[in-house]
Length: 308
Ligand SMILES: C[S@@+](CC[C@H](N)C(=O)[O-])C[C@H]1O[C@@H](n2cnc3c(N)ncnc32)[C@H](O)[C@@H]1O
Image (cartoon, rainbow, N blue to C red):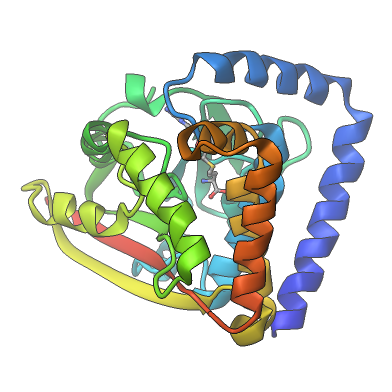
């Protein structure tokens, strides 16, 4: 099973690299994104080159949970008028996988940047560029199911409150809202702990909560407009030693998080390290993992139903 995840990932990566090198439109989008990136408040990776790690994380979560979502909605997929929204959809992997298999629901994706496919996509998927922080461009009670995944470091804690209310607003009464979020690993060795401590302190100083899943649960449980809050946790050990192929895939996500721009520059300043020292220390952290310290990473699926 683990081998099949990795071969799916490898094929997907080859397809993505092949198609992006041919497209000048994609390069233009990339430049626009990098310009807009400079104006963004948050500091963690958000470039088109991060698409690879988003795709890996998608397939890894699907493998670990043995499903693409956890809310009880499977039986609704034969309804022609069922509407599904993915907020912060990135390259659209989650939506495209569902839309390829299911003919009927109408799928909608929204992202701040147009890194989703605009031409080659199933007919039942529509993508829109938009900023959830400025309000979703949809009326109240529009969607039967609203999904958002892997946004842990994107929003400040206050923003999470308003984003969650916005997702609830566009969901129909009785419909479902679902989140998938990875957590920072636990049981880390001393070197990786040094990275995590720096990241947590840096994030706290910007009011970004890196361990957001339990906070999402608390926000939902205290929201009078939703009911039946539920969650599942899937755990993977970082690195191949204990985690096998899944641990190796998660290691790639983890590497991307700490090594893709602008993270190294931000962390170097904060940890008072040169770029070389940072890269050497990160390599030491990986060696620490492969030498037997196997941190556990939890992925959360959290879902609830909008009250009638
Ligand atoms: C880490 S990626 C996750 C992408 C996708 N959900 C996935 O799991 O593959 C975060 C995504 O959120 C988008 N994003 C960030 N801020 C946003 C905002 N205010 N409104 C909409 N999308 C946003 C980014 O452009 C990026 O595609």
